[in-house]
Length: 290
Ligand SMILES: [Zn+2]
Image (cartoon, protein in one colour):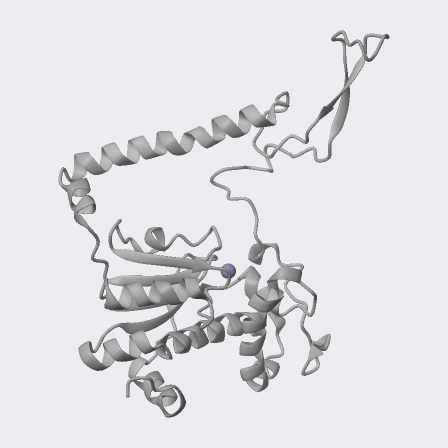
């Protein structure tokens, strides 16, 4: 059982820091302008109803979503129309791409040869291509909660295998982010149900760096540091794979990079992971090239 405190510091943190929490994208909704009234409401309707001889039927109205007009109660219609904008965006994007580069889709259809494998967090605020300026075809992307690389996760292991052995990627980027909800949850001593085994891997990172983390008095700084250390440990997990070790021995690539994205200014911090040093450090126990 996890103690409620580690090293005298409370584990639960950032609850009062809305900037690190998940919230609706401001690109989509503006709750400040369009308040959500919340809760289901019932209104009287004058429509005739055999179930109600008085002529006033109770109609249950779902809560209005953020973004819906004050007098709009049709949630399904709103969602359909809101969803439709994705297809409209797609048409515009395809037309723009074609105008800028008539061969763009011919190249995409011909196959992929990305230089990068991106392992990022599923958090909706970190679109790999947008924050790095990469184009379609330049990054093979895998995302999960807290950008984890777990050796028993067939999904991420298959992605690494394919990216390294077939796509021959030259770089593998693990990109975490400050304010990561997954890392925050792992720092919270609470039963998270189905998420427990996943979060356990982040709790294990805390255990490995317990001394360093507990020496950081400020909760927010400690949280940020765990985000960074988690990225470094996931880089190490990639270096532990046979695929990466074999490829690096033969080709001198892929190179592993550990980055952290910062919501506050949009910047990426390079943790300057030293691939060779990391490989040397694990080979005594994890060498799989013999
Ligand atoms: Zn995250």
